[in-house]
Image 1 (cartoon, rainbow, N blue to C red):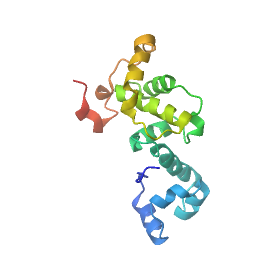
Image 2 (cartoon, rainbow, N blue to C red):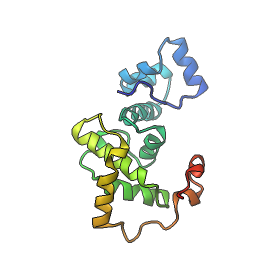
Image 3 (spheres, one colour):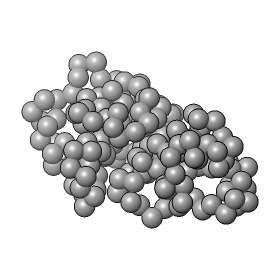
Image 4 (cartoon, one colour):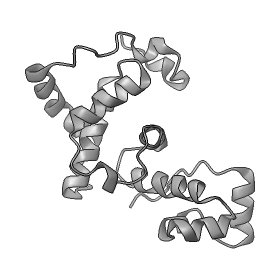
Length: 164
């Protein structure tokens, strides 16, 4: 498990943890109902925090990727079992309404690999060759969005990483 999970806690949530002498790292050890009780939070918020921890436990996948999975309705690795990386990536692009940087597809490939093999030795960049081979053979869906992620305005933090 990753040493530091970004829970994106509010100031109030951090204060409650401090009062209860519970560290953010300790949250990984609690079930959603326990998190809800500790933080005086809703079941939905506890589910989000549990999902953030579970998704970020995969090496090289961060909070942004975890939040995107939740935005698509996924809250656990079990919900993603049996899914194919290309299908997840294509659905992500449709959800966003723009085509994404290739490293995002590599991240989906890592996600699926991790779910299938529980192999934490790989990082997203280990799947670049696999992605390229797959797309060379199968291409992209005909209805793939035409706007690039860096032109969409949806990813303001990533504007600096425009494709060159």
